[in-house]
Amino acid sequence: MECPICGSDELEILNSKDKSSKKKFIEEYLLKCDECGHVFKDVISAKKPKPYRLIISEQDKSHKTTIDLSPSDELKCGDILLSDLGQVEVTGIEIKDKRVTQAKLEDVNTIWASSIEIPARIGFSVDLHGEVDSYKLDLERDFEIAPGDIVKIDKHIVKVHVIKTQDRKLTSGFAKAGVIKRVYSKPVKFNNYDYDLTKDIVKKTS
Ligand SMILES: [Zn+2]
Image 1 (cartoon, rainbow, N blue to C red):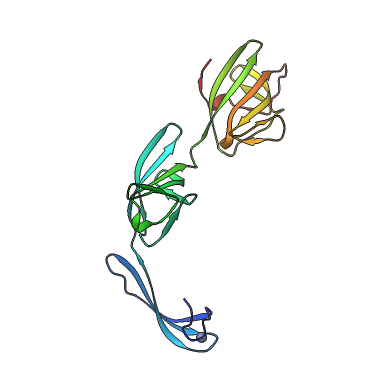
Image 2: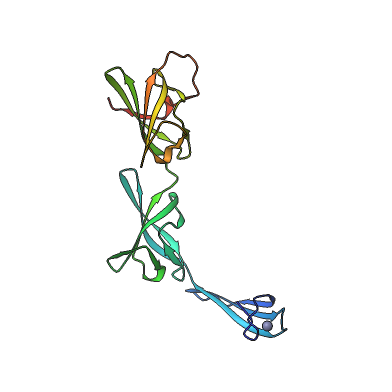
C-alpha cells in the first residue's frame, strides 16, 4: 500500500473493516499518509485457500495428499510448504499438462515435492578383507559423519575412510547424512567409539 498523492508507504491505519466473502478475504483500510497527510481508502483482497493436489516423494515411494493454498499466491520450485506429512520442498509444478518451475497457484493442477523431514537413507560398508558387510541406515538428515570417525555398527567397531556423497568422494572434512550415498569403513581394534549406529540399521544387505 502506498499514498496515491506522494507515493510514500509510511502510512497510519486509521480504521480497518473486514469485508470478507465466502471466496475472498477482503480488508478495507482507511489510511493516512505520514508524509503529506492525505487520507484515503485501500482494499487488500486475497482468494481464500483451496486444496491443491500434492505428490510427495520419499525414498522410493510417493504419497498423494492435498494442501490448502490461496489461488492468489505464486509458487515456485524450491519453495518450502508445510504439508500434512511435514515440511516439503517444491520440486515440480504442473499447469495444463505442462511442467513449469514457477506459476500462479490459480493455474496449478498438481504440485510435486520431496519431503525434507524424513530421515536420509545411506549405505554403510564395512570392509572385512575380501568380504563386505553392507548396511542400510536411516539417519537424521543433518547428522554429520567425518572420515576418521570411530563408529560402532552391529558387531563391528570401524573407522570411516571414505564418504561418497551425491557428487564427490570425501577423505577429509565431513558430510551431512542428507547428501551421503555411502560410507566406507574398516574395522579397528578399539574398544571406544565416537557414536553407535546400530540402532539406525534398517537392513543388512550383504
Ligand atoms: Zn502522501
